[in-house]
Length: 102
Image (cartoon, rainbow, N blue to C red):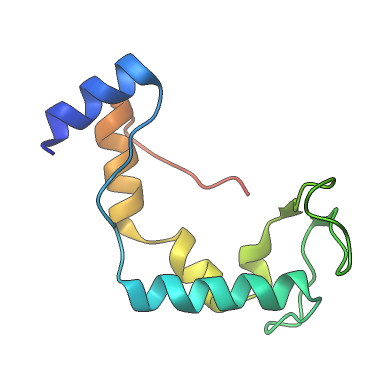
């Protein structure tokens, strides 16, 4: 899909299903890192800003909402700071700058 096609889809549908913007290996590491944060294990020693999920909570009835998990684990920080993500979002929205708000 060209960037023009992606932007047209975004403007029409409000979302785009993109090709992968990072390696499968990084995504696998990030999945493991989020499992660690959900379990309350913070590689950096820093807790999330706000954590509305506890291990044992029922995912069918409670949203897994963890604010700023990128402060807890360097792999999550690596994912959220991938240039390809910002570049793709900027190409869709026409933004000059993109920030992650987790």
